[in-house]
Image (tube, rainbow, N blue to C red; front, top):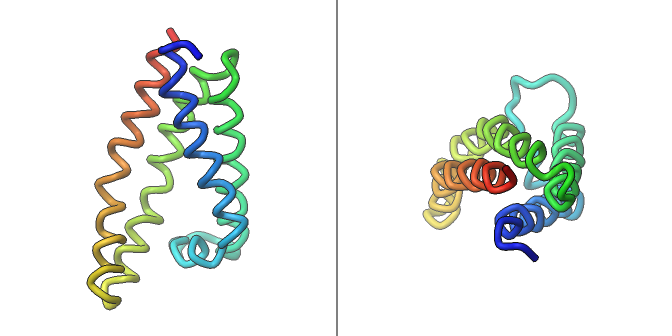
Length: 123
């Protein structure tokens, strides 16, 4: 594995794992779907799982890596409202649960930067 491919391949693994989680334990993701979105939360959960899998495959393939890394950064930005919804919905849960929900919010920034780095590494 080339040194420049590592960030993208590691990110591909993370995205594939997240995708699998959307289908293995969908209820936790359904609960994060903002209620303002039309349709059923499960449909959004499944759609985001499919998108994550497609991004993972794109990140793993050298020919599509740069474009997929950019798309991953956009996707991670687009799903941020779900993390906000989760933090809001979990405001009355245990301290540990609230901490987890609130910690996800700033975590999105390094994930987005990681995807951008992976895109730049493929120049």
